[in-house]
Image (cartoon, rainbow, N blue to C red; front, side):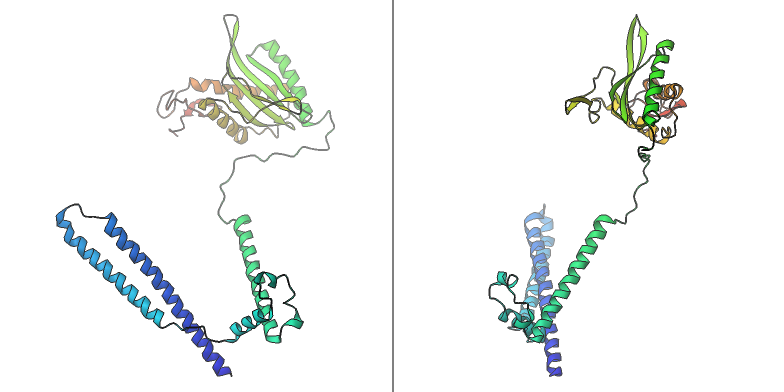
Length: 347
């Protein structure tokens, strides 16, 4: 009995091997047909001198095609009319013979109960269930690893993580309250000294605010604004800067009946969009507002530092010695020395 099962298994493996060879030959036959067709219809020679080589290549491709077809036909003739009778296949046939003939009803009925199947069929069904569980478990594991645990190295980020608001602060001692009190003192000092900075609150909440900063000069008894920007403060930390042209207006939207500044709308000019990017890079890398204790002096220093952005239109590039290149001024510079400014294409 054991020898007959072994012979049946060997015969079954030989049949499978022949089937695999037939599939490989079918793919080769398809590729050769496609190559011959493409050679016939797409690569016609331009001169009569090339026709001889062209016909030789067609003849070679045709011979390879016919040889491949002959091999496939030989392998197909050696295939068995039916699969050999081995125990696993017989058990599967027994399972389907004992079950409902309607395939969809197999899973709805109680055919996989112990009293309806013999011992060998039951073992086959249990092995099938275990195999399916194993395959599904591997699939879910690899899907999880591929989607959520990617192995590629991520580029280091220069973004400073946003701090959480402190819950133990009292209302009068919170970082946001300190910022607001310092800002009120800052506005009073600007009115006395007339430094050309005009700050106003555009939006105020219990934990944050949006401040508009305008920079201007006095010309013929009129104030001419040279720079306009937004400073977004949350829990005492300046999180974002936004630049627009001096003549542009901010966008607003209505949120539950209240007017809010739309921070998603940037300037219509590319130069001010790039100024916003550079300002936020300086904010993240050069100026750490998380450690600042807000006073009128620190607010004046911060606004003066960002006020230097209006001088980039007069600065010359350290590399090409030009003011404008590609219709843009040198936008890459250090707060401490504008002489080291660079164009984006000159760095």
